[in-house]
Length: 107
Image (cartoon, one colour):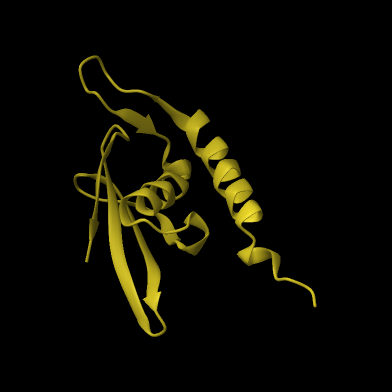
């Protein structure tokens, strides 16, 4: 029987590391005293998926994120993951106008 590689723990770890490697070079220290990082708009969905994975205790491969949206306050990335068949949790990651990550909230 052939095992589905999407469920292999080793493959999932590699995917998480690869996505983090893609997201981290786009992060730069924020302005002095900000305590945050700036993230380029193109990297915000990957950064958001990583934060949601950590925050909600799920595998990063199970997180779905949409495109970066510009808002009056800065940027937002909507996402979701499945809790159980037919039951999903929606969340949003927010970034200020400089691209500093400001948080993830579940809905």
